[in-house]
Image (cartoon, rainbow over all chains, first blue to last red; front, side, top):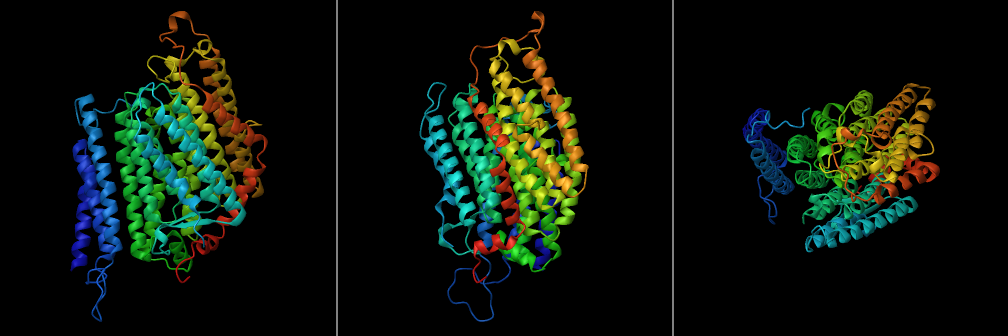
Length: 114
Length: 503
């Protein structure tokens, strides 16, 4: 059941994220960008977090129970930091662009298209 | 396997240089930061030369971070390919810093400029040296975010727009990369390149791994601006500050190339056929698209950025061709192109820096020849010859290597393409030379005033001297490239050097 819910969550987040990223409104696109990264983080979590049900770094594990994978959490932590940095930079750039062009519509911010 | 500190030094010397430079002030007059960065760049280049010599002498070098055994720990591996690309990147970046020492752009005087430049070098060298897929992603993001910030503060008023475009596109690329990495981890339970290569070579091929291969290919193609993913590249490379745009168009696109070479030789060596067919098609389209777009564009820097699409097309064509000779040609081409393209972009920037609007648009720079130092025109002529592949420059060696790989297979396509693209390149390079440096504009046509001072052209002159040297004395590079290909064709060398735990 958890597998199915995870797959559903990743799929739905990915779909919404792609849809938002293709919007003309750049703020919505930025939110879609962040959602896509969340979807991927969930996907990374799903690859290893449910291989066992005992938290990692415990010493006495009962027989027959597996330890959950600690590496995926480290990976997500790094990916979150990276995506957070890109998201902040993206919003900063949108801020500059909105002041310069007076709009956050990607059709208006197209002086380079000649 | 012993730990070789040089492998890690090439990554962390630029990083600490950037941090030290951050402690000092940076203004128009005060150049402390720039000299510190230059020192860091020179040390990095020296390290990369030593590393390449050691690798050629005693085989690939490794460094285990924190002393944890692979595949559990992160390992840095420098084999021939990494060391050669590292030498290329460090040398060109050193020249970029040398150019920015005497650059008159306003953005160079911002205190964040040189540190970000050095962090970009960290990301570049790190992604070339790492033997761990996730670390590769992190270093690539470091490179992307630093270059985006640098473009956003560019003197060009379109800088933020181009940076916005790039960060969205490249964010998508990073997403695919991360998705591919997660899928690989889900399949093989490892992030170590050598471990993955070993498991893939033993014949395990779940569907998830194949889709991961597709996603990684797409991400690398996007990062190196190959034809269907190219649309951000001319904007981004044109609006960047000159020292940076020279780096972006020459070495940063090569990281994607490096990723593709690793992908088809180490990881998906068996599926390489399908990937390579795709690369041949994309390469040929890229060659013609890049060359024709360069012919009809309106801006000097933009012309060179389009020309990069064409030249990257050649490298992809050679990787796609797949024979040892073609792969050698791809490595020679990638190495030589970095020096030629960075010097040409710096020359174009040196021209633009002497004008008031600091723009390389042809409507501004056409007919300025008499007012510019004659040296710039002469250097542009030499660089144009090199880009088009006229002997005795190193461009000829790369074109010759491409043609040789075709002739050895009795296939004439690469030869025809090399000649056709050479003619196209000659056309647009020498038309620019004529219009900008030779033609005399009518007095009423001149709309801009030329300033007496501008960026100095020492860095492009040095780069072109390297080009001439590599053209006259190409033997060492060709030998190293052949040795690299011999090493790449036997993935077990890379895998055994990493020394997997229990394997």
